Image (cartoon, rainbow, N blue to C red; front, side, top):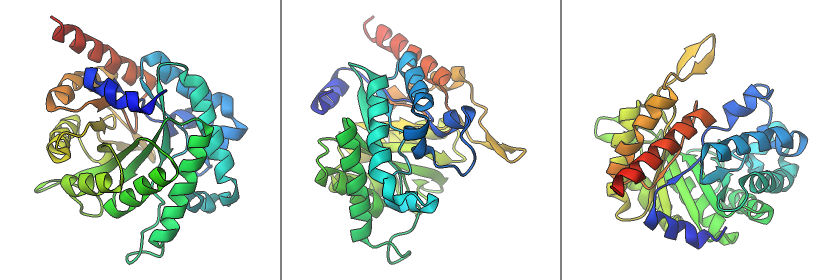
Length: 303
């Protein structure tokens, strides 16, 4: 796909991103603690099946299975040397499943370690890790780089800048938020406005939120309004969890149904959000219901 046309498409209509990947792979046999990115090579058919189910649900944007694909993150599995292999393979699998008329988002998650001066990772090391991952994703066929689930605005800016340096024509950046007394903040204490500003300075053109800590669907709608105001005309993406999780026998359970998540679609659109998707706990069934809600909304707009 032409990534420039993604921005153009958003002028004409809102777009639907896909939903959770990790829980879908776990349902297909991925063990706790196992490297999901390795499955792009060793179990590509199962990864492709997840993508195809989101395509069948009506999603416009398909996200690669590469959330932990930097060499820094892969080093925790002893697989840092295979980063380019896993990322290229992940992009190829997603590209194959997406087919024509959809965009593939090359997924770049946080390093999982704090940057200096709070941690031991230097900005130079982080920049190289993000740049290398983005280059591999683009080589495999990703149209856009998605920097997601960020808490540190500095890390998000470094990741977005690295993606641009790798040749990305379009970068999306999203953050994980929690409710605070003055609105919403990330785990690092950053406000929505601070996050949006840093991401755009780093080179992101679409900004927003995915995931969150103990946020209800109503919270995500309010967060969407806050992000739209902060973005000052730039497109905003929101990908809520299927509600706030609760622990059952040590496992996170998400209670919001497909119908309940779909009921929020008109509220997100009314708030000015232009890309809607799902995060933790969402399934192809959730996304299919959301796609139908978007179709109904569009039909209503046309009278």
